[in-house]
Length: 225
DNA sequence: AACCCATGCAACCGCACACTA
DNA sequence: ATAGTGTGCGGTTGCATGGGT
View 1: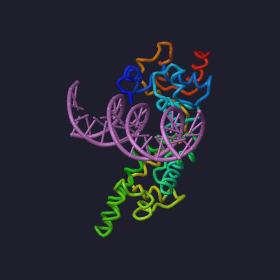
View 2: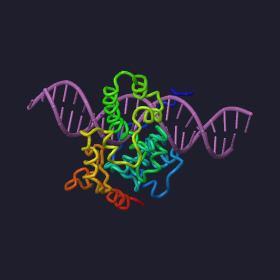
View 3: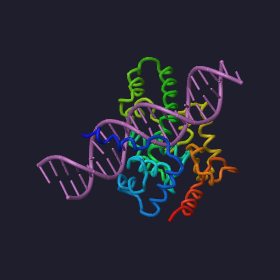
View 4: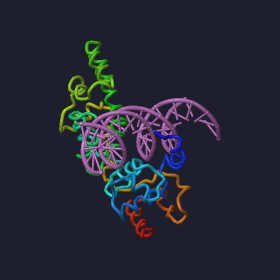
Protein backbone atom coordinates (compact mmCIF):
# COMPACT_ATOMS: atom_id res chain seq x y z
CA UNK A 1 0.00 0.00 0.00
CA UNK A 2 1.37 3.34 0.98
CA UNK A 3 4.48 2.15 2.64
CA UNK A 4 6.43 5.32 2.05
CA UNK A 5 3.94 7.58 3.68
CA UNK A 6 3.63 5.09 6.52
CA UNK A 7 7.34 5.22 7.17
CA UNK A 8 7.08 7.97 9.71
CA UNK A 9 4.75 5.78 11.71
CA UNK A 10 6.70 2.61 11.06
CA UNK A 11 9.79 4.27 12.43
CA UNK A 12 7.97 4.64 15.71
CA UNK A 13 7.22 0.95 16.02
CA UNK A 14 9.53 -0.62 18.52
CA UNK A 15 10.91 -4.10 17.99
CA UNK A 16 13.11 -6.43 19.93
CA UNK A 17 13.19 -7.23 23.62
CA UNK A 18 10.63 -5.63 25.88
CA UNK A 19 11.77 -3.31 28.61
CA UNK A 20 10.34 -3.51 32.08
CA UNK A 21 8.74 -0.14 31.57
CA UNK A 22 6.84 -1.46 28.58
CA UNK A 23 5.85 -4.54 30.53
CA UNK A 24 4.44 -2.44 33.32
CA UNK A 25 2.55 -0.25 30.93
CA UNK A 26 1.01 -3.30 29.32
CA UNK A 27 0.18 -4.95 32.65
CA UNK A 28 -1.31 -1.73 33.92
CA UNK A 29 -3.40 -1.19 30.89
CA UNK A 30 -4.76 -4.72 30.79
CA UNK A 31 -5.46 -4.66 34.52
CA UNK A 32 -7.56 -1.57 34.03
CA UNK A 33 -9.14 -2.20 30.67
CA UNK A 34 -8.87 -5.90 30.01
CA UNK A 35 -7.23 -7.62 27.09
CA UNK A 36 -8.29 -7.90 23.50
CA UNK A 37 -8.45 -5.62 20.44
CA UNK A 38 -4.70 -5.56 20.56
CA UNK A 39 -4.04 -2.97 17.92
CA UNK A 40 -6.09 -0.32 19.61
CA UNK A 41 -4.84 -1.50 22.98
CA UNK A 42 -1.29 -0.86 21.89
CA UNK A 43 -2.21 2.60 20.71
CA UNK A 44 -4.30 3.49 23.72
CA UNK A 45 -1.70 2.27 26.16
CA UNK A 46 0.87 4.45 24.47
CA UNK A 47 3.06 1.52 23.56
CA UNK A 48 5.07 1.87 20.39
CA UNK A 49 4.46 -1.78 19.65
CA UNK A 50 2.24 -3.63 17.27
CA UNK A 51 -0.88 -5.25 18.61
CA UNK A 52 0.62 -8.56 17.71
CA UNK A 53 3.68 -7.89 19.78
CA UNK A 54 1.59 -6.85 22.76
CA UNK A 55 -0.57 -9.93 22.51
CA UNK A 56 2.43 -12.21 22.28
CA UNK A 57 4.14 -10.56 25.20
CA UNK A 58 1.05 -10.80 27.34
CA UNK A 59 0.12 -14.35 26.49
CA UNK A 60 3.59 -15.81 26.60
CA UNK A 61 5.10 -13.88 29.43
CA UNK A 62 3.08 -11.41 31.44
CA UNK A 63 -0.16 -13.24 32.09
CA UNK A 64 -0.48 -13.88 35.83
CA UNK A 65 -1.20 -17.56 35.35
CA UNK A 66 1.64 -18.29 32.98
CA UNK A 67 4.10 -20.92 34.15
CA UNK A 68 7.60 -20.81 32.82
CA UNK A 69 10.48 -23.24 32.95
CA UNK A 70 10.78 -26.56 34.77
CA UNK A 71 8.72 -28.73 32.49
CA UNK A 72 7.85 -31.70 34.65
CA UNK A 73 8.25 -35.29 33.47
CA UNK A 74 4.48 -35.57 33.42
CA UNK A 75 4.22 -32.53 31.21
CA UNK A 76 7.00 -33.82 29.04
CA UNK A 77 5.22 -37.10 28.57
CA UNK A 78 1.98 -35.34 27.83
CA UNK A 79 3.65 -33.15 25.25
CA UNK A 80 5.04 -36.18 23.54
CA UNK A 81 1.74 -37.99 23.55
CA UNK A 82 -0.17 -35.03 22.24
CA UNK A 83 2.44 -34.26 19.64
CA UNK A 84 2.25 -37.84 18.44
CA UNK A 85 -1.49 -37.39 18.19
CA UNK A 86 -1.72 -33.94 16.66
CA UNK A 87 1.68 -33.04 15.31
CA UNK A 88 2.82 -29.44 15.51
CA UNK A 89 -0.51 -28.14 16.78
CA UNK A 90 1.22 -26.30 19.56
CA UNK A 91 -1.67 -24.19 20.68
CA UNK A 92 -3.87 -27.26 20.84
CA UNK A 93 -1.25 -29.07 22.88
CA UNK A 94 -0.81 -26.05 25.11
CA UNK A 95 -4.47 -26.10 26.01
CA UNK A 96 -3.88 -29.40 27.78
CA UNK A 97 -0.99 -28.02 29.80
CA UNK A 98 -2.38 -25.35 32.10
CA UNK A 99 -0.20 -22.29 32.28
CA UNK A 100 2.05 -23.39 29.46
CA UNK A 101 2.15 -21.44 26.24
CA UNK A 102 2.34 -22.76 22.72
CA UNK A 103 5.58 -20.89 22.25
CA UNK A 104 7.19 -22.49 25.25
CA UNK A 105 6.07 -25.95 24.27
CA UNK A 106 7.25 -25.39 20.74
CA UNK A 107 10.65 -24.24 21.95
CA UNK A 108 10.82 -27.08 24.40
CA UNK A 109 10.04 -29.56 21.71
CA UNK A 110 12.58 -28.20 19.29
CA UNK A 111 15.41 -27.80 21.76
CA UNK A 112 14.94 -30.84 23.95
CA UNK A 113 12.71 -33.56 22.66
CA UNK A 114 13.53 -33.29 18.99
CA UNK A 115 17.19 -33.61 19.84
CA UNK A 116 16.58 -36.82 21.72
CA UNK A 117 14.40 -38.19 18.98
CA UNK A 118 17.15 -37.56 16.47
CA UNK A 119 19.58 -39.35 18.72
CA UNK A 120 17.15 -42.22 19.05
CA UNK A 121 16.72 -42.27 15.31
CA UNK A 122 20.44 -42.42 14.79
CA UNK A 123 20.63 -45.25 17.25
CA UNK A 124 17.79 -47.22 15.72
CA UNK A 125 19.05 -46.50 12.22
CA UNK A 126 22.37 -47.94 13.17
CA UNK A 127 20.71 -50.95 14.76
CA UNK A 128 18.38 -51.63 11.90
CA UNK A 129 20.94 -50.94 9.21
CA UNK A 130 19.90 -49.48 5.89
CA UNK A 131 16.68 -51.42 5.37
CA UNK A 132 14.54 -48.70 6.83
CA UNK A 133 16.48 -45.78 5.54
CA UNK A 134 13.46 -44.39 3.82
CA UNK A 135 11.50 -44.24 6.99
CA UNK A 136 14.33 -42.94 9.09
CA UNK A 137 15.37 -40.19 6.75
CA UNK A 138 11.75 -39.45 6.14
CA UNK A 139 11.08 -38.92 9.79
CA UNK A 140 14.06 -36.66 10.05
CA UNK A 141 12.64 -34.68 7.21
CA UNK A 142 10.54 -31.87 8.58
CA UNK A 143 8.14 -32.14 5.72
CA UNK A 144 6.87 -35.48 6.91
CA UNK A 145 4.00 -35.63 9.27
CA UNK A 146 5.11 -36.36 12.82
CA UNK A 147 2.38 -38.90 13.43
CA UNK A 148 3.89 -40.97 10.69
CA UNK A 149 7.25 -40.42 12.23
CA UNK A 150 6.43 -41.91 15.57
CA UNK A 151 4.23 -44.70 14.42
CA UNK A 152 6.66 -45.89 11.84
CA UNK A 153 10.05 -45.55 13.34
CA UNK A 154 9.81 -44.72 17.01
CA UNK A 155 6.40 -45.58 18.38
CA UNK A 156 7.02 -44.51 21.93
CA UNK A 157 4.48 -45.96 24.30
CA UNK A 158 1.85 -44.03 26.12
CA UNK A 159 1.69 -43.55 29.88
CA UNK A 160 5.00 -45.17 30.55
CA UNK A 161 7.80 -43.15 32.07
CA UNK A 162 10.28 -45.96 32.01
CA UNK A 163 9.70 -46.58 28.36
CA UNK A 164 9.93 -42.91 27.66
CA UNK A 165 13.35 -42.69 29.19
CA UNK A 166 14.28 -45.79 27.31
CA UNK A 167 13.41 -44.00 24.15
CA UNK A 168 15.69 -41.19 25.17
CA UNK A 169 18.44 -43.67 25.70
CA UNK A 170 20.01 -44.77 28.95
CA UNK A 171 22.46 -41.91 29.00
CA UNK A 172 19.63 -39.44 28.89
CA UNK A 173 18.04 -40.33 32.18
CA UNK A 174 19.47 -37.14 33.51
CA UNK A 175 16.81 -35.29 31.59
CA UNK A 176 14.01 -36.93 33.48
CA UNK A 177 15.91 -37.07 36.74
CA UNK A 178 16.76 -33.43 36.48
CA UNK A 179 13.15 -32.56 36.02
CA UNK A 180 12.19 -34.69 38.95
CA UNK A 181 14.79 -32.92 41.04
CA UNK A 182 13.49 -29.50 40.18
CA UNK A 183 9.89 -30.50 40.14
CA UNK A 184 9.08 -28.29 43.09
CA UNK A 185 8.09 -25.55 40.79
CA UNK A 186 7.72 -22.06 42.07
CA UNK A 187 6.14 -19.59 39.71
CA UNK A 188 8.78 -16.93 39.36
CA UNK A 189 9.30 -14.51 36.59
CA UNK A 190 12.87 -14.20 35.49
CA UNK A 191 13.07 -10.89 33.82
CA UNK A 192 15.12 -11.24 30.67
CA UNK A 193 15.21 -7.65 29.65
CA UNK A 194 18.02 -5.23 29.93
CA UNK A 195 18.32 -4.40 33.60
CA UNK A 196 20.03 -1.17 32.73
CA UNK A 197 16.79 0.08 31.32
CA UNK A 198 14.96 -0.58 34.57
CA UNK A 199 13.85 2.27 36.72
CA UNK A 200 16.25 2.69 39.61
CA UNK A 201 13.49 2.19 42.15
CA UNK A 202 13.00 -1.47 41.38
CA UNK A 203 14.51 -3.97 43.77
CA UNK A 204 17.59 -5.61 42.35
CA UNK A 205 19.68 -6.59 45.33
CA UNK A 206 18.68 -9.91 46.85
CA UNK A 207 16.98 -11.67 44.00
CA UNK A 208 18.99 -10.02 41.26
CA UNK A 209 16.88 -10.13 38.17
CA UNK A 210 14.34 -12.65 39.40
CA UNK A 211 10.94 -11.08 39.62
CA UNK A 212 7.92 -12.83 40.89
CA UNK A 213 4.61 -12.16 39.27
CA UNK A 214 3.49 -10.91 42.64
CA UNK A 215 6.24 -8.34 42.48
CA UNK A 216 5.14 -7.21 39.08
CA UNK A 217 1.51 -7.08 40.01
CA UNK A 218 2.21 -5.26 43.24
CA UNK A 219 4.33 -2.84 41.27
CA UNK A 220 1.45 -2.41 38.93
CA UNK A 221 -0.70 -1.59 41.92
CA UNK A 222 1.85 0.92 43.11
CA UNK A 223 2.13 2.54 39.75
CA UNK A 224 -1.36 1.92 38.61
CA UNK A 225 -4.19 4.39 38.63
C1' DA B 1 42.23 -15.00 29.48
C1' DA B 2 40.35 -15.01 25.14
C1' DC B 3 37.98 -17.04 21.69
C1' DC B 4 34.70 -20.20 19.56
C1' DC B 5 30.75 -23.01 19.41
C1' DA B 6 26.39 -24.97 20.92
C1' DT B 7 22.22 -24.27 23.17
C1' DG B 8 17.96 -22.11 24.83
C1' DC B 9 14.65 -18.72 24.56
C1' DA B 10 12.15 -14.42 23.33
C1' DA B 11 10.35 -12.22 19.65
C1' DC B 12 9.30 -11.45 14.72
C1' DC B 13 7.24 -12.79 10.30
C1' DG B 14 4.05 -14.56 7.07
C1' DC B 15 -0.01 -16.90 6.34
C1' DA B 16 -4.72 -18.41 7.14
C1' DC B 17 -8.93 -17.95 9.30
C1' DA B 18 -12.86 -15.42 11.53
C1' DC B 19 -15.58 -11.67 11.98
C1' DT B 20 -17.86 -7.47 10.62
C1' DA B 21 -19.54 -3.70 7.86
C1' DA C 1 -20.81 -11.53 -1.81
C1' DT C 2 -16.82 -9.12 -0.76
C1' DA C 3 -13.25 -6.34 1.17
C1' DG C 4 -11.06 -4.86 5.31
C1' DT C 5 -9.41 -5.71 9.83
C1' DG C 6 -8.11 -8.32 13.78
C1' DT C 7 -6.52 -12.55 15.73
C1' DG C 8 -4.22 -16.96 16.11
C1' DC C 9 -0.86 -20.15 14.71
C1' DG C 10 3.41 -22.30 13.18
C1' DG C 11 7.95 -21.47 11.45
C1' DT C 12 12.05 -19.02 11.80
C1' DT C 13 15.55 -15.86 13.40
C1' DG C 14 18.65 -13.36 16.38
C1' DC C 15 20.64 -12.70 20.71
C1' DA C 16 22.38 -13.96 25.28
C1' DT C 17 24.68 -17.24 27.85
C1' DG C 18 27.41 -21.14 29.27
C1' DG C 19 30.79 -24.57 28.33
C1' DG C 20 34.77 -26.18 26.01
C1' DT C 21 39.31 -25.49 23.95
